[in-house]
Image (cartoon, rainbow, N blue to C red; front, side, top):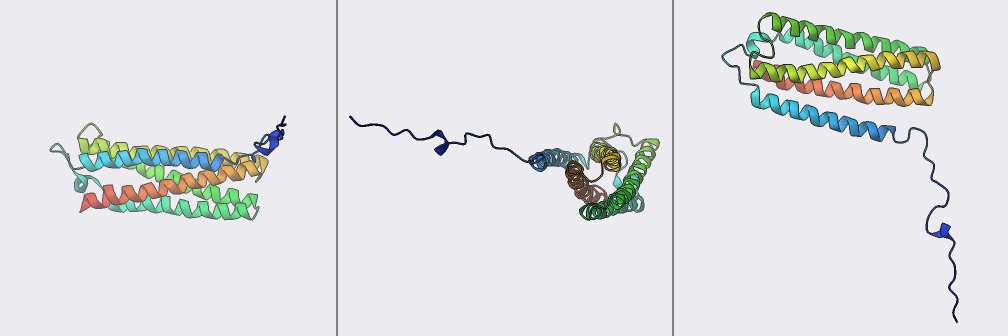
Amino acid sequence: MSTVSQTPPGDFWEVEPHHHHEGASTSIGFWVYLMSDCLMFAILFAVFGVLGTSYAAGPGPKDLFDLELVALNTAFLLLSSITYGFAMLAMVKGSRNGTLAWLAVTLVFGLSFLAVELYEFNHLIHLGAGPQRSAFLSSFFALVGTHGLHVAFGCLWLVTLMIQVGQRGLIDANRRRLSCLSMFWHFLDVIWIGVFTFVYLLGMI
């Protein structure tokens, strides 16, 4: 009578649980979020592409947009991306004060961007060109306003991280959070370049 050899269970699967490093899935999860955000902005761009010429006998881009003001706002956001890059370099060097200083400069540029955008919205509404005036303006306010809300959230996140870095230093958790915010901030820059080109420049041609 033959005997059946017993194979230790460990030859087929791991008996001990597999341990993941803390925060190992953070970057992947955040990339998934950015892709979902990208899909949302793609829909808003598509809506504007369809409705962007529906003026309802009202004012159009050439009547409303101030390219010099928009160019200034674009400069604020692009400069904020550069200064955030300097903050990340300071983080890599282990300089807490340098990181905080560059984050503060980034925050100033971000708030300046929001201030100009709020001024533009207020000016348009004062002229009677609010989102209810035409399909063009509805899609414009939806697209640009959604981007502005993201910048506002980014500024709030930036302030929170500055407090955490000031209190706890450049620990691993804060480095991961700064890296995630870096991806988010540069993502907003890319979206704004699309807005500036597709909404403002093409609208003025």
